[in-house]
Length: 343
Ligand code: SF4
Ligand code: SF4
Image (cartoon, rainbow, N blue to C red; front, side, top):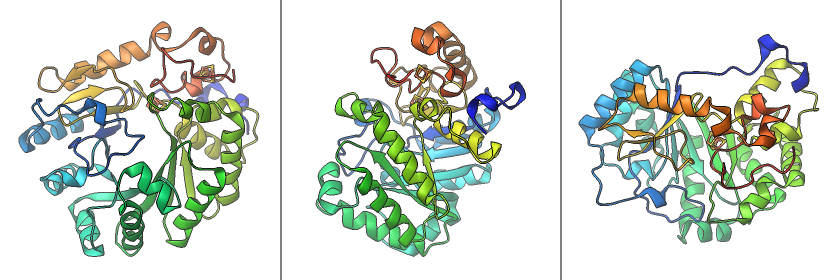
C-alpha cells in the first residue's frame, strides 16, 4: 500500500488531545552535548517546579487526557524527587519513558527500582558506536563506557521496553548507525529511536536532514534490520521521499506516517521545569506557563495557531501532496529556515 492509496477514512488522524507529554524535571545535566537543544533555556534565576507543583501538573495532565510521559530536557535522574514523581504518575496510570544518558545508573537493582516506581521504558542515549566520538560529543571521557555498561544492566532488568536513543548527527556514517543497531541487537534491546539533530547552532545538520541520499540509505538500513529490532525515525522528509514506496500492510504504512509526521499542535506538549509550555521541545516559542495559565487554554492557543495554515506552513507546503501527513515538516526550522528541498 502507498500513501496515495489511503482513502479519506484511512487518512492520518488529526488528534486534539496532548496524549504525549515531554516533561523536563530539570535542565541540569552532568554532560554538555553539542546537540543539546535544552541548555539555551536554562536560567538559574527562575523559579523551578517543586514537588507540589508537579502533583498539580500531573492532575491537570490526567484531566486533559494525556496518557504518556517522556522524561527529557536535562538529565532527569539529577532531580532529587524523580522517583516520587514517577510513583505519582504511575498511580494516575501514565506510561512513562525515561530518556537518560545512563551515567547515574549503577546497578540492575536500581533499574528494577525505577520500574517499580513507574518507569515502563528506558532509552539510553548513544551518540556513536565509538567511544572517541561519543565522549567528544558528550564532553566526558567516561560517557561511552557508562552508557554501554548501562545498556548491559538494562538488558538484565525487568523494564518492559529497553532501547537506545540515537541523535543522527554529522559525525557518524550510515555504517556507524548500523553498528549502533548491532549493539542494540547484541544486548537484546527492543527498540532504537533515530531522530536527526534539531539544533540551529550546527548548520551542517540541516545538510543531513535535507540529504535525500542519506535518508534513503537510512531507510534501507531499517528495512534490513526490521525483523530483528524495532527502529523508529522521526523525520517528516522521509514521508515525501517514500511517498511512492509500497508498504506491505496498511498498518505498517500508518505506523510509518505516525512516527514521522510532525505532532506539534496535534498530540504532544513540552513542559519544562519552569512550567513553560511549548508545542514541542524543539520549538522555541513559549505558549504559556502553568503558574499563570491553565493548561486547557494553553493547549487551545497552540492548536489555534497550528491549525492556521498560513502560520504553520510555507507556500511550498500548501502546494505539496503529502502535506496532510508531513504537516509541513519540523517546526523547529519553520519559518526562518528553508526546511524542505524535496517537494
Ligand atoms: S513541502 Fe512541506 S509538506 Fe511537502 S514534504 Fe516538504 S515540508 Fe513536507
Ligand atoms: S516540531 Fe514537529 S517534527 Fe519537529 S521535533 Fe517537534 S514534533 Fe517533531
